[in-house]
Amino acid sequence: MTHMTEQTLVKEAPVKPHLPDAQTVTEVKHYTDRLFSFRCTRPETMRFRSGEFVMIGLMGDPDEKTGKVKPLLRAYSIASPSWDEELEFYSIKVQDGPLTSKLQHIQPGDEIIMRPKPVGTLVHDALIPGKRLWFFATGTGFAPFASLLREPQTYEDYDEVIITHTCREVGELTYGRDLIESLKTDELLNDVIGEGFWKKIKYYPTTTREESPKMGRITDLMRSGEAFTDLGVPQINPETDRAMVCGNLAFNLEIKEMLEGYGLEEGANSKPAQYVVEKAFLD
Ligand SMILES: Cc1cc2nc3c(=O)[nH]c(=O)nc-3n(C[C@H](O)[C@H](O)[C@H](O)COP(=O)(O)OP(=O)(O)OC[C@H]3O[C@@H](n4cnc5c(N)ncnc54)[C@H](O)[C@@H]3O)c2cc1C
Ligand SMILES: NC(=O)c1ccc[n+]([C@@H]2O[C@H](COP(=O)([O-])OP(=O)(O)OC[C@H]3O[C@@H](n4cnc5c(N)ncnc54)[C@H](OP(=O)(O)O)[C@@H]3O)[C@@H](O)[C@H]2O)c1
Image (cartoon, rainbow, N blue to C red):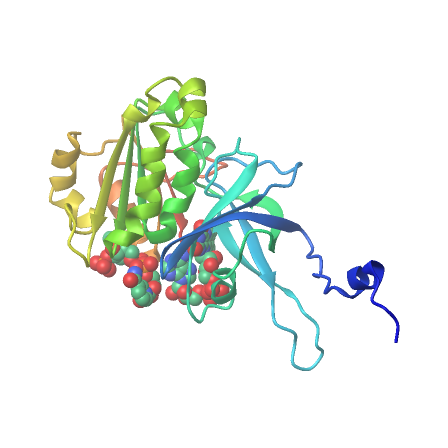
């Protein structure tokens, strides 16, 4: 019988397959049984504009016939700002979701796949200048705004930034609430953008299915005028107001119609205008 040397031990240790376009997870935080955020390394050459999304994922299960494994990728908004040396994502956990049933179990040190080709319409370049910027989010639609709220240009371009976040339950607001609170003590941002830059932010969280200080869908609260009264601002108008929208399809369509009703026109990268929209998830 041969003795196990240190060398054979190293050789026989299970080797993790190296993923294509792999990035290493550095931090994971769970908020509810349906929501978590994580941070990972950023490729040195990767550039993006705050508010854009990328394709991320894991290797799928082996094909039953061929045994081959393919990457399982989904669109994800980058929640960190363009200047951050790491990347942050804010994710749903769909219990039978092909990707998130697995992704929810990642730990620091694990690898994820990230295709470094960011795209998207929720970018400053797609809006023409204005005074007040509205971010309208439901659920994980907060993610691109987590990036834009930490982007210096947001405060250079606007006098006021209003972020509305509508969720079913109170716990689903935690990620956004903590992030906005953290801006007050963020030394780097207060240095770079200007001390007290965060005073430009008006945060308007609402819930629809659990008791909280402000209940109701943001759409209904705007229609009744309650949201404008609460925020102490006039109704949205095309001279001063610009908007970015990220939520489920029905929400996006409803807000779009309302913004058009206030006289705002939809913009795009190729044709900047007064508001832009992106889906927080398909269907
Ligand atoms: C442009 C774009 C950006 C996106 N950014 C994010 C992001 O930043 N964070 C994120 O968690 N997801 C985001 N998504 C959704 C994401 O691509 C996946 O759908 C999600 O990760 C679930 O993947 P899955 O394979 O587990 O389930 P899927 O098969 O993709 O989805 C299963 C079902 O779960 C529901 N669902 C999917 N995503 C969500 C969600 N985010 N919130 C609530 N219900 C959902 C839908 O009903 C969907 O039919 C984005 C989608 C698009 C199109
Ligand atoms: N959140 C949960 O606790 C939960 C639990 C299990 C499964 N799910 C499933 O997961 C999926 C996504 O759920 P989700 O809660 O993340 O996202 P969601 O259904 O998009 O709801 C997020 C928030 O947006 C509001 N909203 C929906 N449509 C709107 C519209 N047209 N105008 C204005 N506001 C609107 C919702 O209010 P309303 O409440 O009034 O719709 C809710 O407060 C759903 O298919 C759901 O069945 C959710």
